[in-house]
Length: 450
Length: 173
Image (cartoon, rainbow over all chains, first blue to last red; front, side):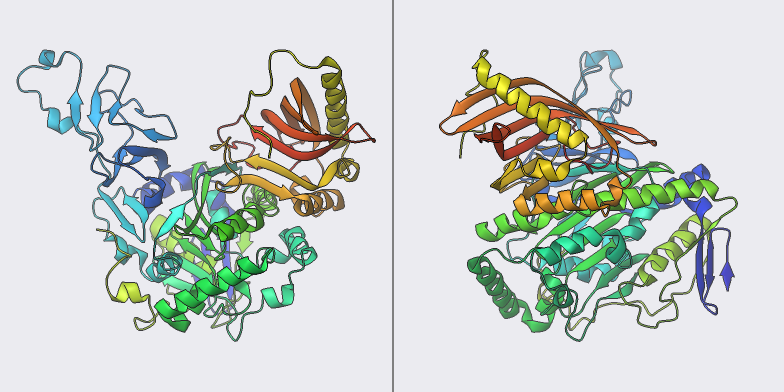
């Protein structure tokens, strides 16, 4: 029995409870800023968003403004979006290309590698002026895995692959779907919720709410002719929750050769699209073997602690990150990523049959927004009604995807970082055995960027 | 496919009789939406219709290439309407009050279609909040005996750069 101020983790009962003050208290958010967002690896963007040299995107990562760009030599960089002179945010366009980053306030100009290259009336600073010390700072660490670029504001951060732990194989399962790599498609779902950011972590890996919250979505699938019984079955391997270490978790199946792979979209509209999808499967099997391909096509809801979600349903893959600006408000950015060499008919089908089911105007997400906002409203009673229950599946050694192991994994790591409370893992950490992982990773190519 | 250019073939002046008919139709359509008579509203559409809302950062996005917020064909639109009317769209249960302002209507007849551009301001009001959605419509109408027109393509392009703080589009725009 472990009972801290925010998390009750009782393996005997079993019982797992979260104190709702963790979702409303401004002091908790302050600690999260310091102990989570200032220390963990955080998602910045995907390399494919930047197609050419000097292309940039402005982002907020862990509450700090950054410029995510390719420099003039096309290398990926992250620079702090704040002039070293007086701190003005230099670039406010969401995206664009620029050979120089120029602050209009006093006219200081920086190269795309961050060096201070020009300023009006430089001689007034005197002969000992150290221009090199005034470059735009990069975060202490920037690294990428399978094209997913992360930063850490923590100088002592462990290497990214160590931090990602068992999550790397699940990023491989996304990346391995194409030899040509992944491409984030243009157009972003930029939205918000009046709810605590941790509620969206839970919601993104919550298989339990689908039948009730998303009843209309499932009805749509049924009305379109999808056999829900088949769609949600998975031959011999129902999706499960797994603890990937370091607070990362996934709900996924081992074998998507039947069922789940296309369960969350309308049927293929034409025989040629269905054939192309089968042909792609054949190519993947040839390249990666039956077992890895079946895993790829099984889909997955992946949480990379603290705030990166990858929901890969194979014919649609959402990459979502979010950041709190208040205990009861978060901003969310979500992208769609797909094989860079997607066949045009499959791409069209992806767009018309799958993508817009999701997102803040789709047939599912608005109801999630409503649900989380109403949870937050309910927490106004937290002093007299203090506890959330997250104990589903706690007595099950192999928790299913509608159970809540994956949320407890998040909360235990959260409790360790924010409150210094240690928790033993509930189930053994899951790591796809080396003999099963991506052929490319075994060969040491492709996945891990320089 | 007709030109989707934003200004052509719309000049500074237009066929007044046509514009009056289109304005009447748009007001009628807005009233059906504000009155939550969505089943009747759905009947204004052709079988081959589309209802699109581009992503806020790609207002001129290509629906076959770029991510949209809404990309409905008739089937999905009917599903959307059904859920809104039967109470399983939780984000609109209880229903919000909406109030639509439509103005700056321009239109042009191109072969058997009428192309329409108009500005909209949709207010979505609940006891908790009022969300404001400004934007423009790009519509393709075909003439019909009942109500004057049917809608073949209906695109609502939001002027918002981000969907914040509304966080969602749970109503029909």
